[in-house]
Length: 359
Image (cartoon, rainbow, N blue to C red; front, top):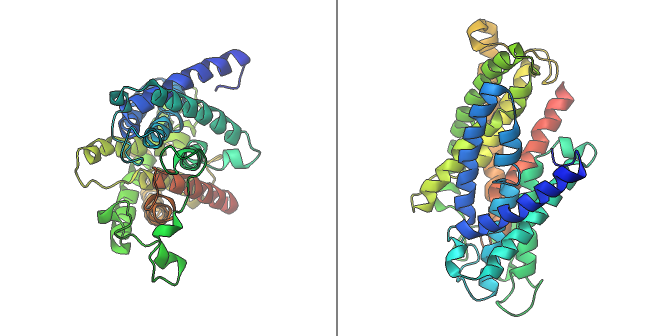
């Protein structure tokens, strides 16, 4: 969207400056909650009109795109710690405008620009740009950069941050998985770190998202086809709906409720459902014709049920990958490196690549 002309590129760049600053001002997690609301509102516009401007600009663009607004909040938090203005650099809940230091918001703006440019760059990489989630990968890269730049001892120099903080590894551990196991030195979500917990969250939220994504792909897709739009337009965006719901759930996590963090699960499970359902029907995502569910026969419903099982499998995969990334980068760290974003980009690449191979 933002590379069609120099003018629209500059427009998006200026909007990203503001988007990153706003994300820092209100706090990264609050910005992400607003991303969720933008996704849901944009889906209403999309279903009614077939226009994706809400998803492209509001939800996943300079307005509230996670790579801009949330990433700006993440960078602002660790910078505030580096400057001695915030105790915990992982604190992406605190609205940083309350600190009263404009330089913190300017760092958010700077990382908003970085997110804007990085996402565009990734999306234009041949093959890879179309086979990954460029927004999620940008969130990860931005978080890694912020840690490296500001994650060292407060005021003791830039680019002294550590990605793994090995000094906090479990001392008596002999294997790498044992060294990074959650414990007193850090953990992400205590109620969502054991294999049984990850299996439950991954599978059930996966089915939850897979079913919704199939219904949206089929029914909205059929309606938009009658309006003259591409038949698979809804399918290509279907996984974002439950992602939006999961983002809104973060609001309750902020209020000190032990809510499940599962936007990586719903995103990937929904994607898997709409990518593999056409394969089960003997087609591919590019050749399958989506029809309203009211017209489906027993065989089609049976294949949809199998697609839900596939969604559950990939939901478990995403949940496990998110916890691994938390143990790798987040648990012992001085800043927030987002485990779900790390899980989303890699899981997305796995899903769309496998679907392409089986097509």
